[in-house]
Length: 192
Image (cartoon, rainbow, N blue to C red; front, side, top):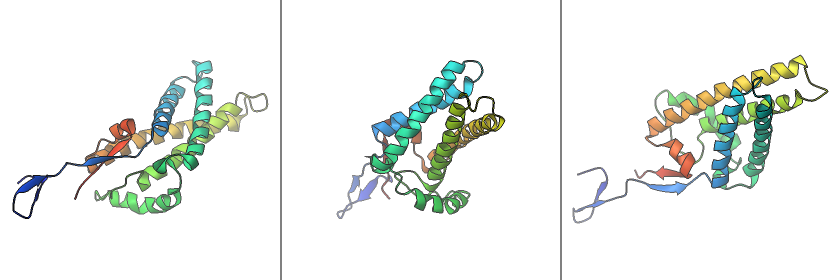
């Protein structure tokens, strides 16, 4: 008997769906995610070579961060920030348990994903604000603004690499295509 079959009272197996999907990431959040990813990628490769383009994507990142702040309070259920505190407190224990492959099952962000969201939003905010300040008359050429911008921008790239590695790891451990979930907005719900 295959694992998708469930014995009925009369002993005849009945096929059960492999798993249904549920809507998790709404369209505005998915557009925001991919627009931010593209903006960060373009920003990383354009400083000092294509300064105008670098500024445009920097301002785009600021606008996207503003949208995410608003959407974190008024967006759909899994877009809201309401569980951030709880998930951040759970993050160290959650990450510790990943050593043994214990992932739990979360519809929205798991505690490690929540920690990554906060770290990325904070470092992107610092990078974007210091980048915008560095082209003003008051702060142009000020060393600590430039250094902070460079450090925050490098931190963003390190976090992006960790984020992608985390998505691959969790997708592998949970046998779920999380990239497809961020494209379609739907995640699979497993039957146990």
